[in-house]
Length: 138
Ligand SMILES: [Zn+2]
Image 1 (tube, rainbow, N blue to C red):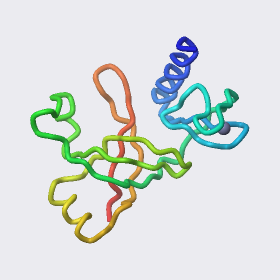
Image 2 (image 1 turned 90 degrees about the vertical axis):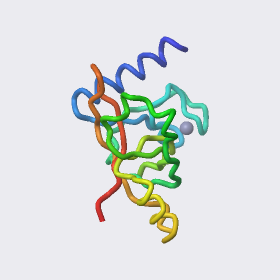
Image 3 (image 1 turned 120 degrees about the vertical axis):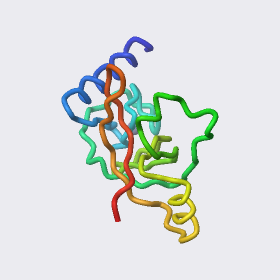
């Protein structure tokens, strides 16, 4: 099981190198898992297929990173926050969302704008690519 899970993770990163953000879709119930997992969390089915996601997403909650705990490697991201993100295909995850300042967060919360639209981007880290989200420009 763990070896197969590693294979899933490996394919996910290989797809990122090709510029594709991929998720796994259950062939039985249609649930989409992102980040991809080996078996469907909704029905337990192991028959999952790769799909490319549109990148469209909504941010449901905003948590500012604590100044002391923010890792140096995240400095390159610029202004960002953590939040619960729901991709268009239906999966929810906790992700890094760029373009959020404390002021922006306050504005979003005061105006009751949640969930706010955002989109997935491929981000180059040291030696590998990962997925972050960017707040959509108004
Ligand atoms: Zn399923």
